[in-house]
Image (cartoon, rainbow, N blue to C red):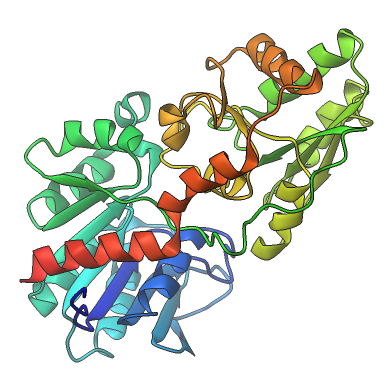
Amino acid sequence: MQKAVERLHILLLSSWYPSRVSPFLGNFVQEQARLLAKQHNVTVLYITTDPSVPELEEIEAFEGNLREIVNYVPKKSYFLSRKKEFDRAFKAGISKLNSVDLIHAHCILPKGHLFVKAKKHFNCPLIVTEHGSYFRPERKKKWNFKERFVVNYSRKSIDGLIAVSEFLKSDLQKCFPEKLIDVIPNPINVELFRPGQQPDDTIKQFLHVSTLDPDLKDPQGIINAVDLLCEKGYTHFKLTVVSDESYSQWQHVVNEKKLNLYIEFAGPLQHSDLVAYYQKSHAFVLFSRYETFSIVIAEAWSTGIPVISTPVGIASKMTEDQGLLVPNHDSLSLALEMEKILNGLTFHTQTIRDKAQQFSSENVLKQLNQLYERITK
């Protein structure tokens, strides 16, 4: 019989977290907070600017064992003024807590210095889960002084470092060569994201879910692949693009290319509403230039559908029974792999879903508890 894990009071800090200013920013961090609160007492402290407030505004919310403190500070033009506001908001949040057993922080940039400040205040272990794409070589070369300072300042204070994929770990290790880096994935709700009825084969359905960031997600490349399929005479398919961000720019591109019959847009959606989109799809398409994890791939696999993706995030370890890999920046290759689906290539739903169980909330919580026990003993 497995020994019960001691209930801890965990302070969760993050550079990204949902707020009224950016409702979807870091929603995966909030999901981890909710997961931890199933077994531990969790306090979230998040600080963000809000141009509409004239002075510090503190908002608290409670949900079972989860306490969320979001402090909004006015937007200031000068660095020292901004630092003063953030320091005051941080001190106000920390003052609400008597003690914590450990700090679990997310995303070192740009607020990693606050993680260190909290560690010194509470004199407890600091664990950091990294999700950010800013450790990729081409982005790292462009770090400004503050970014370099925050990473270097945080380095010695981190007691446990987590990468959400092996793909991210390889880049992260270059900045933290002396650190043992654990790989613990983001959790998904495998009970919510589950296979539905077999989709209708009359029209092959493809799905893409992302922020549509042109620098990372390459939506133009996906549109070009659809255009190539149309040029080859394929008409029995549709690509649905779901995004929490504005897609008007890409809707305009689709209109100009006269692809409205083949590409439609939706969103923003509640997370649970995504399930139906996965279930009615024959394949999920991701054409990103870089991903540290890609929750949408894990969700697609959990619903039993194959993935067509560049070798990024968890897709970099994808096996041939989970989907099809395509090179970066190659819309023709993407079109050719989509064409295989149009011509009847199928995958075994249950095999795909079985492999997605590694991302289940239960499995991720177990791994986190094992790390907590190792760090705090």
